[in-house]
Length: 76
Image (cartoon, rainbow, N blue to C red; front, side, top):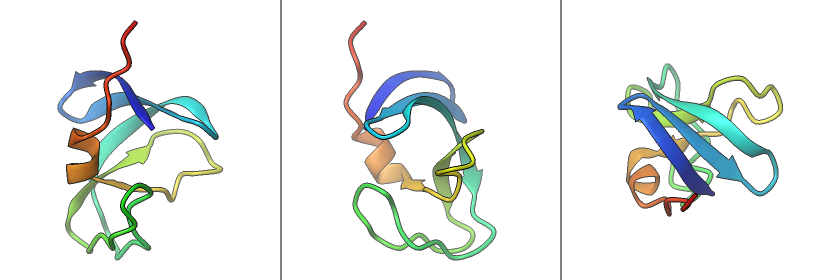
């Protein structure tokens, strides 16, 4: 995963090997999650995490905030 750019505090463009570039949003989880797609740690209900905005295939993927802050920034 790579960070392509952050539009504001709640919207970022992230690239994954499998799905390419996507918009991801920061959101408060309404239920417990299987875990972060990067570190695989569970993310509890009520915590903030990042998730893809529009792709139906990976819409349940979540990225915890610590992993988001460590994403490498893609140089353009």
